[in-house]
Every structure is written in structure tokens, then in C-alpha cells.
Amino acid sequence: MDEQASITADTLELMLLNQVAIRAALEELSLWVSHRGSVHVHENVMGVLATLDSHVEGITSGIESLRE
Image (cartoon, rainbow, N blue to C red; front, side, top):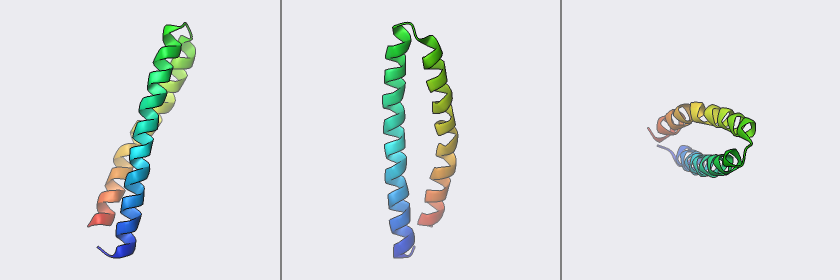
């Protein structure tokens, strides 16, 4: 793997880790909101988080390709 691909893969991996952390924080806040009666808000947040989840595999695959 060349240096540019390595730097790109490392950067994308850090961004993916940030995405996972932000997702977890948003889910925690959404559950808190839901327990206070805003179930609609919780459902909307969970829908958006599902979109993030659907992209994880593609991002991971791209990182693996860069590392080869």
C-alpha cells in the first residue's frame, strides 16, 4: 500500500469511529427524549441512525480496499 492510500484509509477509519461514537450519543439522547414522551422524535432519530448504519459496511469495505 502506498503512503497516500494509507493516509486516506487511516483518515476514513477515524471518521468512521467518530460516526459510530456520534451515533451512540444520538441514540442515548433519543432514548432519553422518548422516555419523556416524545416518541415521534425518537422514531425520527432512529430512522436517521438506520441510514448511518446502512453506510458502515460500504465505508469499511472502502477502507479495506485502500489497505490492500
